[in-house]
Image (tube, rainbow, N blue to C red):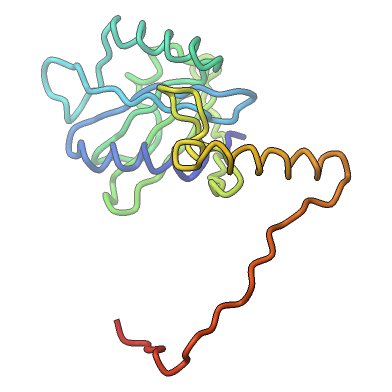
Length: 192
């Protein structure tokens, strides 16, 4: 089974819709079948891009450096079938990939993402579970820092770190007590 967060799933689906009716795709990286990195790639096929998704050696090289930089293992290439089902074509099977990730857009507004394990000429469907981003720390790939830290002061980050460390060591964290504010209910309105 593969696991992917909503954010990464949405990156792939947005790309599939934005490039329709042409095929599109990219590389997936992760650890232990958890998809942690999505690297979208423009279709480089020279002829009918509605029927074929093409990569160049530069794309493969860029993906390799992306995976090494982020300490991810290569999971596979994903691509779309803009008018078809998410089942590997004969052409897909000629690429000798262990896993194929295919987005079927036969019903464009209800795309389907399937993963396939390839063994010789046989394919076996692998489950994909989309999980909530809640509780997942998103890291900016340019800075390597959590996104939270970009919008939070150094003092607030230190305070949060101390609270987390207190919880880990079994101590009760100290929370700032905020006094209730006075609120005039006559100003409340359900109209926007």
